[in-house]
Amino acid sequence: MGYDNICKYLAEKYPADLIRWLHDIEVTEISVLKTELNTEPIHADSLTLLQTPNQILQWEFQTLPASKPSLPLRMLKYWVRLKEKYDCPIEQVVIFLKSTRSEKVYTNQLVDTNTSHRYRVIRLWEQDPEQFLANPALLPFATLAFSESPTRLLEQVAAAVDRIEEPLAFTNISACTQLLAGLRFHQRLITELFPEEVMQESVIYQKIIQKGHKLGLLEGKLEGRQEEGYSIVRRLITRRFGSVSDQLLEGIQKLSVAQLEELSEALLDFETVTDIAVWLASHQQ
Image (cartoon, rainbow, N blue to C red; front, top):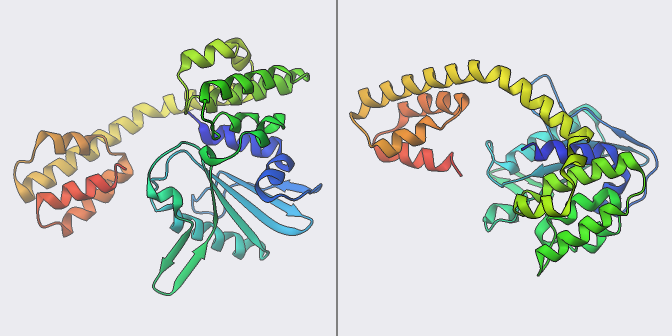
């Protein structure tokens, strides 16, 4: 599911509302930047340039904390590219969508030998839902906010969505709300509270469907490359370590083409089968 696309849509459609929530400031002149920061394929989910005052706000929406490279390193990379290109103050915010006990969602900085870089972190499941319920543009985020009675919260969100009078806004906000709610609630409950046909008419839903079609066209080619990569890695492992467990091979078979290429290089430094298992575990978090 394109949760990043949903958040990106909301950020670009209602930037002033998200700026008010995330930064507690009022702005009138906002330019939404392209998310490609350079010729290299490094992308951020949502970049918003405030022309008054002159600064860049970067919002990174994350479903899960696992990231390759690590999220702190990515945030530093983003900052360097933005500073290099725009040479103005930059404020970075990472918004975690799905509740997790992982310690990674409490990390808000990169600390290395001679480098330290900080950014803000917001965990949606700790946020007060009232700030979202009071603003139609933020209603989709309310489904993931703190509540001792999540079902009751979803009912409140559905009621608030029903009160949106402008037809197009109603359709698109309803669709975004249903899709983000899927991170927390069973589809049956969502369907009971929201009309499914409304979501199918929305702009964001159509974009996701179109993206799915494009991915489908590429799937055959990618599947072929993945199978070839797995075959090569398996032969390298057999030649180096002999037979290994079926469970280990199943884990390797689930890797992406890029991960298989990385593993084939890493195998040169491995001394035992345990090294493979450790590497695999670190790349499946």
